[in-house]
Length: 499
Image (cartoon, rainbow, N blue to C red; front, side, top):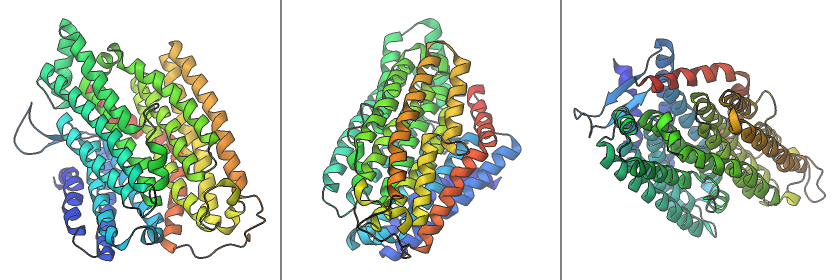
């Protein structure tokens, strides 16, 4: 059936057009890239429809080579939904910053910008759909290079330094991940996730090579934690997010770190086995770091007086939520982790272009005191920022609220000390989120003594349309949380069955 070839197209097509965008004029490169991105949204939506309607999951072999060296893609409704979300959010992020990209990127670099966006699109789809660890590593590296270029491409002081710092930290993470991969392959002789889990289960049953196995899992986890900016490995994040273009900031904060985390949970649940992973102690280490990230990331956000850096630091706390849910150590926790990923991606991808528009109508200033009244001068951006802030804070009817409920539910079913730790971290973070996001929302709607409160009508129609879709997406994640979670649970159910 032709639709079973969609996963291959989702990876190969963006890779192919990335070479074309490199030689086309900037306007043509943008048109081609956005067109292919839109096509990927349609194809991933079809893939989701098929996996849900047929209630199935399937693997696609890349060539005729089997285990242990074969490359495979694996698709359930969880992968299809995540792929759709990633492709849609990338399209909306680029559209929301349609005009600003021309203003903030030098003409000589615009072609590069759309080339790396194409590469990123392919890498995100590959990390979501891969069924083997080596393919995951290859596209981790492609993602790293593309993300570093997204930071560097902006013509702004400090962007080059932020890009170099990003690359240094992420290459460290890549090195640790590769070392863990090498040790795990030496122990199991497998790279495909199902066969790898069988080998790990056998090692655990016999008690052989316990220390090397634990070391490999810790190395893999640490590598992905660094690349995802889990506290305290987040020091590169504020400059990288705040100095990049609005579109790049949206992509980096909402998609790049989430793709690494999605690979992490596939490795844990499908490649290692949840029981073996948690018994190694790696899950408990992640749980502790994630709890600290939730609280201390929020504290850092409160200390900021620059809106873009404040949004950046809030990502540290939200990444903590995602890892905390996964580290609960149950299938319910993994499902809550995926939903939190989607909710945070939709909210954070909207916050950066909204904040940029509020800054634009405030003379280009990003400090809170200069943003007073910007919600009146840019009403749609003010509304979008408010919805995104409320979602992350956990206001009912929005995706962030549903995500926190699912994390709490997973912790309740798990019980034990983790339940109290999760409840304490969620309560503390919610209070802190209210402090810094409510302060910002109040600021943008406070009367200004410097700027007029008259609405500015210079917003690009495509940018405005993208913000409207973002708002609807965040509302849908809240109103349709039950149905979306059922799709995630059904898909992850196939992971646990080893299908």
